Amino acid sequence: NAGVTQTPKFQVLKTGQSMTLQCAQDMNHEYMSWYRQDPGMGLRLIHYSVGAGITDQGEVPNGYNVSRSTTEDFPLRLLSAAPSQTSVYFCASSWSTTDTQYFGPGTRLTVL
Amino acid sequence: KQEVTQIPAALSVPEGENLVLNCSFTDSAIYNLQWFRQDPGKGLTSLLLIQSSQREQTSGRLNASLDKSSGRSTLYIAASQPGDSATYLCAVYNNDMRFGAGTRLTVKP
Image (spheres, rainbow over the protein chains, first blue to last red):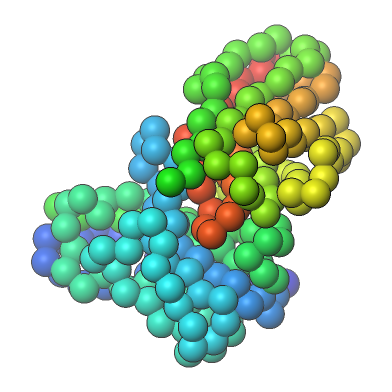
């Protein structure tokens, strides 16, 4: 049971480049979410999904897109990277919105 | 808008001491509150989950309490050990999950 996996672990982008952060879970969880963590600010919710085919915006969705075609995968897309998107990104999953959340190890993204 | 505050931002204690970490939130209409541990460069690990109908949860040396009416939760760590050194975050859920900025705990041998 791998839990929640994220790839890549580290990434450096130039301003304007696009990329996809991958997240997968093998616990058959319905709820998945993406957060970013910035120094001194805690985690902020970017997007979330309550099941395959259903996504919604969180607190800071601008500049990010998501899709949920399967229960297992929830990729996060940056269409045109900006320096303000330099952060550590965490994916999480749980049975429902009110259950214990399980976090992946994170992706450290730097945008130059 | 829900605001979550954790005080203190950092705490250093000698090994063996009992300690309390504080979490406060502005909107009491929450479904649950979770306490997480984060080690440097790692993801978050859930420690305790308290549903809105509960007053406290215990796991080993950890005890978390919840007072919805006053918008407060505390995480009590008994007989602290150097291995407890980490950042502790609380998060509340109503329409979405909101996190505090965390308390960085150092337990000195």
